[in-house]
Length: 278
Image (cartoon, rainbow, N blue to C red):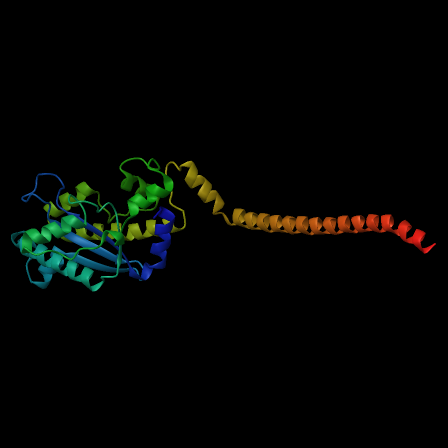
C-alpha cells in the first residue's frame, strides 16, 4: 500500500484512529534497568480530539502517594499505568494507531509490551502491524527522505508550528523525569501527540512545510491545485468533443463516399437502360 492509499484508508477510519506517543527514561545504558522505564503515555482520538492520559504520577495521585515518594514506588506505578494502557487497547480492538517511529524494541510498541512483561510477568495486548502507521515514514514517502534536515522531528516542528513551550526535547524529557517534574513531562508527551494530529491533517491536505520537496511531490502538489484540476477537466471534455466531432465527420464522409459510388453506378447503368428502351 503506497502513501496515498494509506492516507485514504486513515481518512476513511478517523473515528477509529488513535495517535499514540510516550515518554521514557534515557534510551542509553545509564538506567537502573536494561530497558528504559515508561513514564507517561498519551493517546489522542483523532475523530473527537479527545486525549487519554496514562502516567505514573496520575496513578500515584489516585493511590495517595506523595510526590516526593513516587520514586519509591516506580515499579508498581509503571506496571499499573501499563495495565490501564493495554486495557484501553483491548477496549478499542478495531482501532488504527498512528505514531512517530514507535517501531522497535528500543522505542516502540514492543518496548511497552516488554516493560509490562518485566514488571508483571504477563503479556500486554498487542496491535496487529497492519493497524500501525508511522507518521514520520508517511511524510518521507510523500516528500522524500531528504525533505528536512536532521533531527527530522525538530526540523518539522520548527517549520510547522510545533515549537510550543510545553514540548520538550528527548534530553529535556529525561531531565524532567530525573527532577521528578512529572506534570511537565506528561504535558510534553501530550503536546507532541497534539502536534502529530496537526501534522496528520497537513499531510492529508499535502500542506506539510519541508526544506526540500522532491520532484514527484512537486508534480503531485501542482496537479492537486484546483485550477489545474479544472483545466484538466476542461481538457478531457475538449478531447471528448474532438473525438465525437472526428467520429461524426468520419461517418459523414463515409456516407458521402457511399452516395458518390452509388451515383457513379447509376450513371454507368443508365445508358444501357436507355438503349434497351429504344
